[in-house]
Image 1 (cartoon, rainbow, N blue to C red):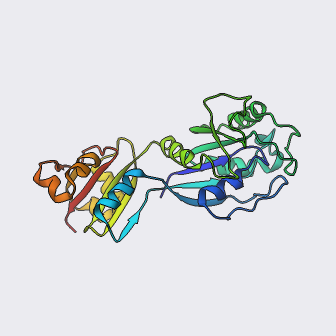
Image 2: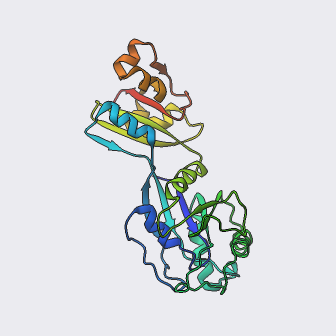
Image 3: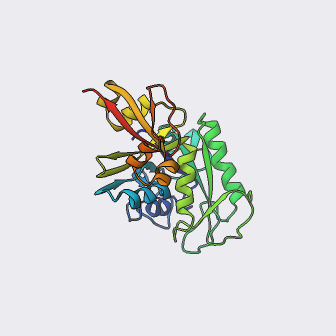
Length: 269
């Protein structure tokens, strides 16, 4: 998978804790001192998908594969990172490689975890990292996330996404918002009724692009795509019933895949 999301922020804001929460296991080293992470941690995270679960219940496949997002835990940035402060050039180079950024901002109090600037000030911390990215010439889609143990934590925009990396609260919503930040939609394939797969695809991409996501041979030998919307398939109750009710459409290479499409590709090898 090509697209990735980098987790950035000041040191000791909970980036590695968030990374571990996303992967639901201990992967990144977590400590109470700055720059625990030097080399980025990389992990692939399944996208929670209610439609996939409903399709699984309907079809009862032998195997179900969710769509996924690649997250990268990047080391903490500090003031003057763009001038090399705190290994800033090394860390900024990693951020340049990602497609979007989750900017994690600390709003939790914990005496056992020191703050790099000695006090909790989410607005100040946000501005520090924003400025360093700007001065480094890095422009990426950004999702601001407040890491807090208190739903009422303030001092920053009310509409910002609030999570608790330590307990996992808000993680599912973060994954969904990161997926949207990457401008992705989901389509589904059902291989012989045995394997149900959710695939990520960029908004506006075509049936030919979708076929290539599944297998390059499908794109090369593309003949047509049989397409039914998730809603119509669920209402019909099966692929055969969808066909009998005239809900399955025949589409060509240039058809723009819609979010929730269930697709069967016809192709020549």
